[in-house]
Amino acid sequence: MFRQLLAPLIFIIHLPLQLANLALWGGLVILFGLVRLLIPIAAFKRLLAPMMNCFMLCFGKCSLALIKLFNPVSFDYRVNSQLSKQSWYLIVANHLSYLDIILLIEFAAFRIPAPKFFLKQELIWLPFVGLAAWALDMPFMRRFSKAYLQKHPEKRGTDIATTKRYCQKFTHQPTTVINFVEGTRFTPIKHAKSQSPYNHLLPPKAGGIAFTLATMGELFTNILDISLIYPQNTKHPMLAMLCGQMQQIVVDVNVLDVPQAAIGDYYNDATFKTQFQKWVNSLWHAKDSNISQLKKGM
Image (cartoon, rainbow, N blue to C red):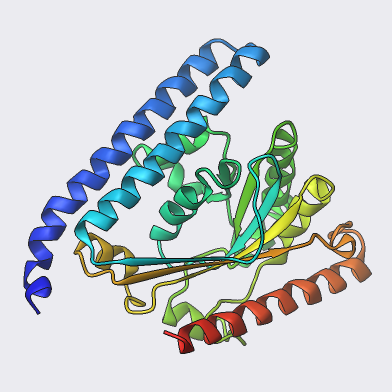
């Protein structure tokens, strides 16, 4: 009860500190990104890339330190196998909150290569976030509605072409590619509207993963199936965190082999497309069941 009374005060103090942390590290990434743009020498770009990735990871670590400072939160990391910074990983994760991004960045630090997110086009206008993501060569995906594609069929497949172009950039050094397979954050309204067959997830979108595997499948050491859970703060995790109400965060990591059957021509091979969708759906059913089991144990 006392902490609930303090929530507005905690929010007023905590939010500016989180924004200052974002501005500091995001500003450094943008600055180095502009330098790299002005000096387009391949060797120089490769020299700057690790430093820029380090700034992003520092943002995650500092942000997590602030979360621990203002919240009585416990972190439960569950990883069923060894990880390496010298490997390539494809992360498939559920998406509940913008807090997910902070947690995945922090999780990557000292464990796996710096992550690359697939971001919505609209986020490029978000202060510090958009330009920093651009400087870090993260792909921005533009989603079109079915009605728009009917009027502009030439735009069909644009997001897939973007996926393929950026994945080719990620083949030169160990990289972690993160894909929020649902394509948007989970909410009860979206869950009901999509008529999702899952209890805790929205239906997966298979195309982006298919093209990532088609382009980089031979490089990926493993697929990391990550489930993010906020057991006591399911409605608004980000707001709960900023108000000092976050109590527990679970990061469950299931390390999977990359099946050869999951690599193929998704858009031109109808048989492969059907098989791939079945594989993604089975992965998502297993993930949904795992989240249910984890929640029962809390």
